[in-house]
Image (cartoon, rainbow, N blue to C red; front, top):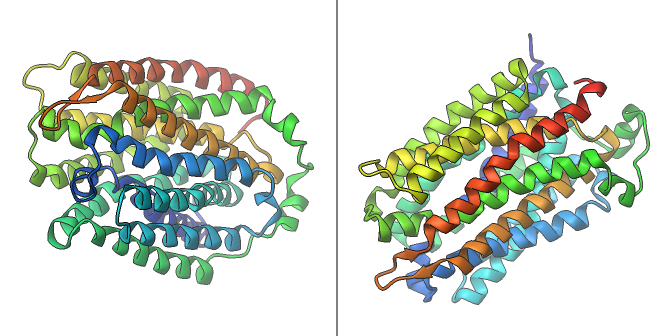
Length: 401
């Protein structure tokens, strides 16, 4: 099936936007032990730094539901990305934990809507028959950020201090915003209303729709489970398992490469086999990884295998879930829906991070006490996803692609 060149260009630009957005979020936790020492933040409280970003993004998603569908998508995306750039740069100037948290709140307030708008644009321009593959390409930015961005950020921190990665990502964001403004076509609200075939529902009716609630539940269980574990991985591997700080970059490099190809394959599998089947496969992988890596650690299992398994499972689940939920909203409600999804996504991630911070306790020497309990919570949430996806898929099936 031939893909129009204009569609390929837009997908590439959206992937670039997501790369900057994801990198801005992803790099903070691996850098946590570096800036924690510099700013006097206990390692058991690093989840609060990550949670401040996600809580702000959740609030921005709630507000965005009220108005984002009224604006041209390209201009709204550029505005959101510029705000993200300012928040990221401000993080590099932080002189204490309070200033860093404030900067992460600013970044999250704009980063959340940027994700919503990027996925809205993708859903606007890519038909359902090709959407799984396109979703895999755009969400592959997560893996590219792991392969290139996070190791580069860790190396920049080692060479020039923990502030340098923040400034580098902000500069990259300016370049991506400029490219998006120059190369992406306008997507005005009027054109979407003319092609959408129906007017937006009232906010209450939209939020209480069983299909919307099922979709948001899928998002919630994925994000809460992942971010109960992810913010603490760097500290856990270093101080509990004894994994060397100097090899963290390699960990993210290998994990990112594997998940990049897994996302591409998962996207194609969604188009061929369906999102629910792919989501089940990813959930089974996640359950086994959490059990063998954290709850009842298998003796001799390498840290690399645990980390790669976690990234692989989450990548497969994320592509499947987002491909399925992209079928929920009509064109006139896409930004509203993506904003609601972003709000739930980031709120759930914040709750997961905060929950882990309440469960975990720091040992002398920086080790974390309570990681098996955190991983068990994540395992239970992971097991819920296939059930929710099957119910959502059943509701969407009568409407077709």
